[in-house]
Every structure is written in structure tokens, then in C-alpha cells.
Length: 449
Ligand code: SF4
Image (tube, rainbow, N blue to C red; front, side, top):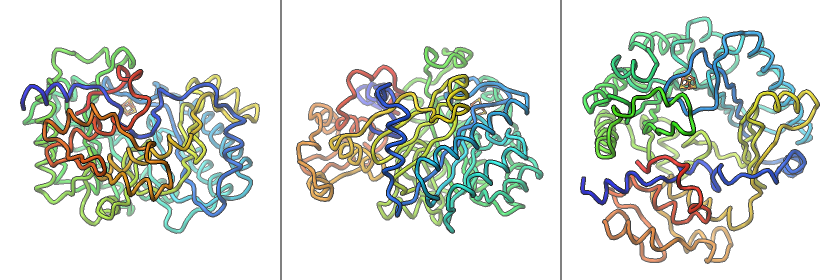
């Protein structure tokens, strides 16, 4: 890789799972705004639910999630009761049993939820919302916690998709990241889920980890192919120890440099695509018959806080401490600290502490960024017509685009923009050209590749 591309890899830009991005949420949005926005939801449109369970039995060194170590089932059960109560508050705010198309449990480790608590929350969702026949009910799982009992409970609750945090199969790397998870554990977890009919299994893999070599990454990709998950997300480790204290346990001297990270991402991708996986967006792969691959092929894939998705619902409702929701009117975030979250919910109040009301220009720029991140290209004239908006809303920062064009990473004629094949890994940098908020937040984001 030449020097100029190497420095581009190190530019810090958002991952654009929202626009504007979370650092631009502010305290001017509160519970009353959220209540108004819920009441404004279109009765004819479905919603999606995201339930955040911020507990783990131990902290992995690389983790960037909002979670903490809790090993007491009664603490988790008590939090589950808050989620149940929050579901009621949200349903009251909407005022009718709105159709739900997608449910996603994230964390943390949602499977730590005691069986009765998990069942009660699912029951509350059924009571307050109308489940679509085609409901996708997904959960993030730590393979080390999956046994046949859990698999049966998940199937009985209607869970039909699961994501495994796999990261890397090398035991040497696992030692450096504080997560011992032998290959056999993942095999057993997959078998348990497949036995009860949960076939749609996603793997999260990582590159850029301490002491991780090109050989490790390729071997992990090859072992993944053997297990044949439906989807694979391949993320670059984002080292932000000033922001995530647990990452201070990572030995920085062992981290691969920008060029090595780039090679790792490309070589892992080559193993996956040569095994028949379709490459999707900046970091996903799917079997050709998976709905995400089909949506990507049709230009219908979307991007939200969970990354690439088939979820087309215009409202994503976040539940739990720190969770973020996205409604047509704007973004809302719940209190990240458990004390405030608990206090609010126990007082029958929505737990919103910050957010961002969307103006028309935000929506348009967000739509351009989403299409770029999903399709690697955008026809700006057509978007202005489709969205019925002034063309100036779609004006990019030309200097950001011209530096990418000069390096052969994108084609741009003032009307249409398309990443070249070589430029695809740098699409976040092109998206940043449409971000009207970017300059004051760059330091908080992860490296571009
Ligand atoms: S990576 Fe997953 S299991 Fe590890 S601490 Fe983070 S949320 Fe918990």
C-alpha cells in the first residue's frame, strides 16, 4: 500500500450507523420530546425493538460496548423488570399495539437474563405490540454461555437469529484480548442452536487485534467457512483506551499497524468470498441465499445502530440503560447510568437524557450517507428529486472528495458519486464529505479502515 493510502487508513471518521452521529446528541431532547415523537408514529408503519442488556460475566479487553461485570442473577432479573416496565411506558406513548417487524437483544450478554425474566419480557412484548408474521427475533450470544437448555428457551421464545461473538480462533490472540474461547466451544454452541431450528447464525470476527498475524486472520476465516454461518461481520478493532478503560489492558506495542490491518481485512475477505460468501458493505459477508445478501443486491439494505440490516422499519425503539432509538422525528438516548435509568422507569417516566431532533437537511444528508455506506455510490440529482429537497442539502465538502478522487478511490462528476473497487474500503471517508457536523468530532471516532 502506498504511503498516502496508509495515512488515509488512519483518518478517524464515524462508522455512520446514524447521522448525525451520537457525539452530536444533546441534552435539549428529553422525555417530553420522546413522548411527542412516539405519539406521532404512523399507525400503518412497523417499528423495531432493541433491548439492551448491559451485563457480562467478565470484561473482554477489547470490548467497546456499554456493559459491566455482574454475576448475580437477581441483579439482572431486577433490571429485566425495568425493561418490562419500559415496554409498557413506550406502548402507552404510542397508544396502540404497533406492529413489530424486528426484535434485537444486544449487550452485554443478553443470554445472562434468568429464564423466567427473559420469558416475562417476551410476553410483555407480545402483550404491548403486534408481532409480524415474518418477525425477525435476533439475539447476540456469547458462545461460552450457550447450552441446549438455553437453545431450547430461545427457540420457545421465537428467537430465529443469533449472533456469536467469535473474534479470533487463535488461542494466543485470545490470551491477549482476555477472552478464552476454544473452537470446540463455538462448534458446540452452533450445534445446540441448529438442533432446535435456529439456523440463521451470524459470526462477529475481528482484525487488528494485539499479536494477531495475517496467518491468524486467514485461519480464523477458513475455520469460520467450515462452520458455515449465514452472515459474518468482520470488524477492525478500534483502540480507544482513553474512552474505554478496559482497553488499557491491551498491549499497544502488539497492535498491527495501518498497513497490516488493511492486509488482514482484505485477506480475510478473500478467504470468505472465495468460499462463496457475498461481500456486503464495508464489513459484512453473507451466504447468497441470506436475506441480507438479497437486500444488498436489490439496493434495499439499510444501516442502523446494529450495522447493516434488512430492517426497513422507520422507527427503532431502544429499551434499557444507554440504548439509542431512532424515530422519524429524531434520535433519543436513555440514561447510560443504571441509577438514573432505574429512577426514571420506577417513577413511570421515559428514561431519555439526550437526543437529536432531525431537520430536513439532516434527513437528506443521512439518506445520502446511508446509501453510500450500503451501495458504495449515489446519484445526487435523483436523490434530490426522490426526497423532494433543495439540491444544496446534498452538497459535499469538495476537498474531501477530491483527495479521494485524485487517488483513484472514487469517481465523482458533481452529479453521481461511485467508489471504485479499490476505493470501497474508504467509503467512510467519502460519507464524511456529506457530514455537516464532522470537523469538531473527528478525534472521537475510529480509524477509517
Ligand atoms: S465483548 Fe461481549 S462478552 Fe466481552 S465484555 Fe464486551 S459485551 Fe461482554
